[in-house]
Length: 348
Image (tube, rainbow, N blue to C red):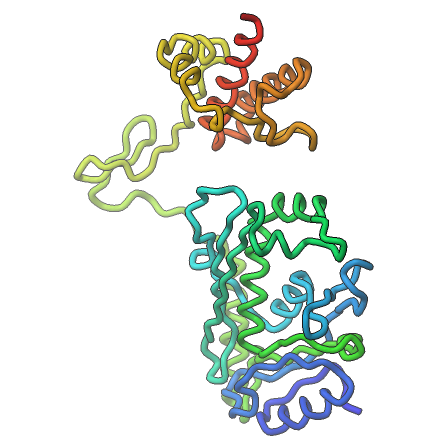
């Protein structure tokens, strides 16, 4: 029996090891395995913890049409062990964010290929959790009822779920992971990858590679000092750096504080057309509560009790004062204006 942890610099030996490992284990290996191993690299294999229970019991598998498939969290662990590094600039949400229950994501990453160079992997996901969408209809139980709790959780985490599914698709596409029988998924999981170790066929090359790796490790620990302004730039007395065209390159001054809450409230109330525009809005565009407890979220503001409406206004006022939520300032400003208008409407 082959040990679940090992390494080799022979592509042919790696193929033999994988064939033996697959007799009693689930093996995730790169499609190019068997090619010559470049100097400085080694093929390594090791187990990855995967819970063989079903997801409903806290495990890493869920039922699909033809058997059982790995959960997104298990696939993330395998991708990490496989050596995939996700590109934070090219991996992104790709929809226009026009609907809260629609999300598209593209995942782009790379891992070490047969020549020691990065090999790209990519995957996409489209999630549609609107009412009556095929994805939502798939949450119906055998008696035909929708699982409201599952749909609510899916909608709350739609962005992170879409990202995980895009990464999972990228990994599946690269290594050919398919659904399996439940008895098979209970077996241990082993991942095979190419790793930079500095090992080589001759001692001279190996010593040079290991010296280079050690030097790189030292350089990575050194903090690069901050450079001064470039030639052709001007630094003002307040620390603002501008180029010879007058364009601001660096501004160390803090962002201006938002006006006090009372000033903002007076500013909103001083807009003569704002209230009249809301009175003329169609009924199906009446403002709704964007957050709150489960019986409150998504309701029309006119449907809220006075107590819930008062809580909603105070929560929005607190968010406007919270620097950590400054990116949602304009949105919370509109929501607060809607809620205050509803309060005034009830007072006649």
